[in-house]
Image (cartoon, rainbow, N blue to C red):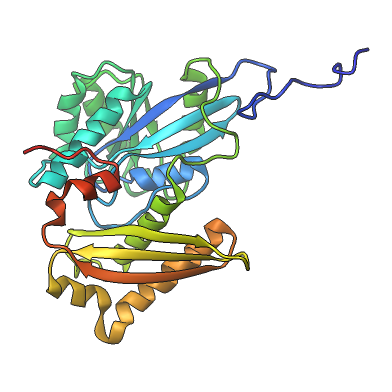
Length: 317
């Protein structure tokens, strides 16, 4: 017996063993706004990597969440919701979503079972006809719809686009998600893993921190603050006592929006800061000192630098 006979396999740089073929690949999550893509991504990864709110178009750029299932590393790409663009930022988001789909090994179309195929969902199905990657249909929120209606919805979608498989899930409860993960792990091509085993996202921590604060901003203010708000992490200082000091700026377009973000006697900004700091401390596993500032930057939605900060290409027109 040699000294390696008791080993099940040698580990490579990514952390997986050589016993058995490994699979890896990129899976694009696309769908209309508010179909539940970010919620599903967090469910499949098993950790929060994408912010969630009921406000439409919350996700602005592609967020990658990395999951290990069986012997496969599945890199999910949570794309912005696809909708009819009206502004420059809208066009950049939709372009990013379709670009992510065309770069993936598999495309996962998520449809809200309650809303069905109408409006943006119908337009996405039409657009998928020109995309050649294998496509999988996932009907979400199945706990809210009768089974016979789900079957009709699945049949209608498959009539429009030839899907490889159809899955019915609830991103909120996790129902059906295990079967979906089994299928993805088996279907992705054989190959080495792209990321270390313990990595769950490729989003830089400064950017993730900004996204978490933006989520708390949406959840606190709901419809009070218009869509045109943006958060950037300007300073990140690791301190000797093991804590981290983070300074972030919330950009709005008008003074009236700044007053909304601050709230009466600063109540809103304090609540947003407290909620964000608590979640960041849990993620970082260290004390967090978070300082938020609100600044007016008129027409930031036409500033190329803001688009680069969000990971979007700036549309020329």
